[in-house]
Image 1 (tube, helix red, strand yellow):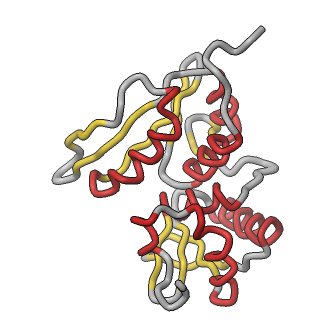
Image 2: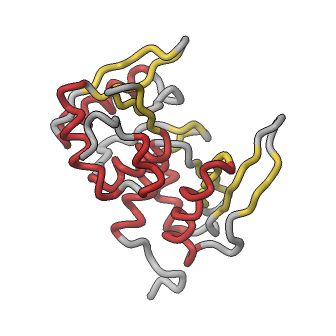
Amino acid sequence: MANTVGSLTKEQKSIIVGSLLGDATMRKKTNAYLEINHAYSQKILVDWFYSKFSNFVLTPPKWRKGNGDREAYRFFTRSLPIFTSFYNQFFIGGRKIIPKNLKLNALSLAVWFMDDGSKSRSSVYLNTQQFSIKEQFELIEILKNQFGLLATLNKDKKYFRIRIRTESIKSFIKLTEKHILPDFRYKLPLVMTP
């Protein structure tokens, strides 16, 4: 029987994986849906996500007032079986986890970086504070095994996050830069950009 709501493309699957390593979340009743929610200053990124998933969204992204002075911009996909498999991989008891046998590609890595990465001088960070230390070490192994990227944990105040080691910065940029939106190239270390 044909899937009347369509199926996810390879590109969409890669984007979901990258976004779930970052700030995206999912919720599930019968089927799951993907929620993309950022500060309004990240509107360009949310609009880009929407352009990739609009065939699964009923209402375009909307501004909303958040806590305090925060202004958010977000959208939700429809609740569909095609999203439920991602929910089942990335969530246990409503908590986001790192799936077993997680496979990344250059696009998912770039999406993760645009979504939740940062730089400081010549360093690149992936803000993985939401994951346990054990899960962060699993991600470091994935980066090494799948891309040859060397990374370490870096203490950010009281939490840890992943830092791409200096000797892997050029490889990281080479892998991701063609997928990084022009408005997010500022996140790449300036000393390394062409």
